Structures are given as structure tokens and as C-alpha cells.
Amino acid sequence: MKKVYHIIFAVVLMLGACSEDIEIEEERLVFEPYDAKVDGLCYKLSADAKTAVVIAGDVFYRDEVVIPETIGYGGATYRVVAIGKEAFSGCQNLRSVRIPDSVTDIGESAFLECVNLETISFPKSLSAVPTRMCRGCYELKSAILPSDVRVIGYEAFSNCTSMTSVTMPDGVEEIGSNAFFCCSSLTSILLPKSVRSIGWQAFTGCTALTTVSLPEGLTRIPAECFAHCSRLAEVNIPEGVVYLSEHCFTNCVSLAHIILPQSLRSMDRGVFEYCTGLTSMTIPSGVEQIGALLFSECSHLETVEWQPQAIPEGIFKNCTSLTTFVVPEGVTHIYANAFDGCSRLTVLSLPSTLATIAPGAFKDCTSLKEVTSHAMTPPQLPFPTGTTTDAGLIFEYVDLTQAMLNVPDSVLSAYQSSSPWSLFGQIKSIP
Image 1 (cartoon, one colour):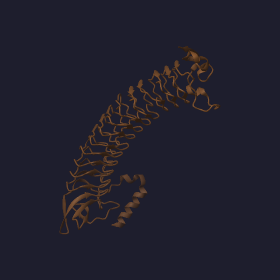
Image 2 (tube, one colour):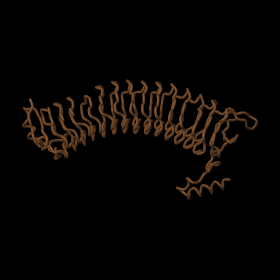
Image 3 (cartoon, rainbow, N blue to C red):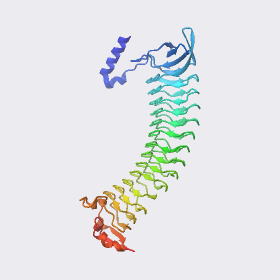
Image 4 (cartoon, rainbow, N blue to C red):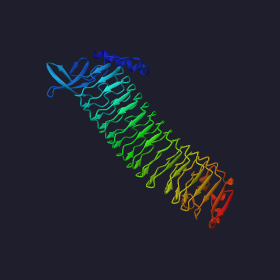
């Protein structure tokens, strides 16, 4: 038999990409040694404890598999207590699995890439959904998790593209990274109040997801958690959340409105990047850190209420619906490309506190017609004296000769003699 395995393996290697055409339904090319095979299932046995673990053995399981609570072998009875690592991995013809309540543990990748698996009945005593348990089970429609589950592991249901619903018990505390990655048929998710931790990319690419209500015990939304959830229209972020990690809502193009909690302190890079449905945003006064590209490519964003100390890099890049913008008092610096590509920005007001503006800050703001600066010293590039960098780069590709600049009367001459302000077609004084 081993000679046959070697021949088949060699053929597979030679065929390369064509290997997908070869169907091996009964015997695995590489099998796991087992102690007993009973009714087509392979087991590892513990003679002392009289327990049995379902393992891969030498077969690809198929159709419906019913795992018994006990098996008889060699004149002894063994209690089935676990499913081993990768036990059913790659069983492409497996349709359903019934797991008895005697099972308390399921190994990593137990049902990995079972592409036609439609149903699993979980045992009541399961405390954790293991890593990659059902990753790539494209036909799995739903998951009802037992009441004892506390942890949903890394990539547990990743790429279960037919899954429309998942029921989590109240005791779930942790949802691992990529747990529901690209579950593109999942329309809603109710996270129990017990959840305290959600991992990176947990719901990335859930393109059918429309609403999300987050539990009150959560303190942070991790990186890319809901990125590319293109139908997500409503998110409830509870008080207690202090940190929105980078790109956590990137490309949520249907998200038109979101209320941020007063507890929020930090918003990382690109949190709402490509959220083209956003029209307005109010950022709580307690937010101390705002990352670059926060609203980049939000093409329908019209207004933002906030009190920042600086305007971060690329924060409004290509926000083409901005027509009027008042930079709040207290802002001392505008970073590079902050308003790059805001092609409909017509009226701009700069605060008295502004000291420096980085290159490209207003690049391609081609509709700019009126700028009012309240600063008593003309804002300059953030470079040491003597640097040859062209100050005109602040308004790169903007025809300032067609724009008007309003400045305090007492410093009119200072603006008239310094770049890029001297480039404006009209410079007028204000009281």
C-alpha cells in the first residue's frame, strides 16, 4: 500500500496545477497512525483513561458523519472526548457532522477547507472554538455556538462565504483575529455583552453586514476590524471605547453617519478612509490623538466638528465635497497633503494660532478663491531658516493669481513680502 501512495504522490507532483482534477475520496496520501477504526472513523485510544480521540487516520471522511459518545474496541468501551487537530481537514465531500456532548475539545483546523460542509452540531460542553476550525468551509450556512463557549479562535470561520448567521452565547469573552474574515454572506452580528476583546480583521470583508452593535465592555476596536464591509450602514460604538485602531472602518462605503463616544481618546491612521458615504462627523473634545489619512477619499464629507491641535497628514485627501473649511483656533500646524485633492474647496479660514504649513497641504485645491489668515505672523514651511524648499509647494498646482487673501491690517506688508502669500492675486486687510 505504501508503494501505491508513493506512486500517487509522484503523479500529483508531476501534474502540478492539474492536480485539482484528481479525486481521492477514500485514502489520504499522508495519514496519521491510529489505534482503532470503528464504523469508518479512526481513533487514538487511551487504555488507562478509556477515552478516544477522533483523528484523521487514513481516510477522507465524506457525506454525513455521526460521532458516537462511546465506542467498543478490543473488549473495552472508550468514551469519545475530543476531535484531534486536522481530523477532518480537507474532506471535500463531507456534508455534515454531528458531535456528541461527550466531546469537550476540538483541535486546531479540525474542519479546515471542508469546502462542502453544510452543518455542524456542536457539543454543549465546548469552551473554545479552535483556531482555523472551519476556515474555508464555503457551504457552511450558520453556526449556533453552545453556551459554554468563551473564546472564538483565530480564523475560526474565516472564508465561510455562505454563512448568513452566527449565534454567540452570553459568555463569549474573546473573538480572535480573522475569526469571521470574508464571511461575505453574514448580514448581521449580535455581540454579547460579555465580549471584552476583538482581534485584528475579525470581520474584514463581511460585505453583506449591514448593522453592528458593539458591547459596552469593549475598550478598543482593532485594526481593520470592519474594513471593506461595503454594506455596513450603522454602527453603535458604546461609551467606554477609547481607541479606534488603524483602518478599522476603511472602505465602509455605505456608512453615512456614526456617533463617536465621549470616552474616545485616540483615532489611528485611516480609520474612515474610503468611507465615501460619510457626510459629516463630530469628533469628541477628549480625543487627543488623530492619525494620518483619517478621512482620506471620503468624497461626500462636507463638515467636521472638532478641536484639534494640528491637522494630520492627508486627513482630508481627496475629500472632494469640502467647499468651505474653517481650521479651528488652537491649531499650530497643518501637515503635508492635509487637503490634497480637495478640488471643490473654495473658501478657507486659517486660525491666529497657526505657525507652519507643510508642503502639499493644499495641493490640487484648484477651486480655491478666498483664504483668510488670522495669524499675526505669516505661516511658513516647517523647515530651518535658509532651507531652499519652495514655499509655493504649500499651494502646489493652485492658481493663486485668481485667489484673494485676507489678513490682519497690521501685518499686511508682512504677507505681501513673504511666500507663498505674496503669490495671491489680491491681498486685502481685515480689522
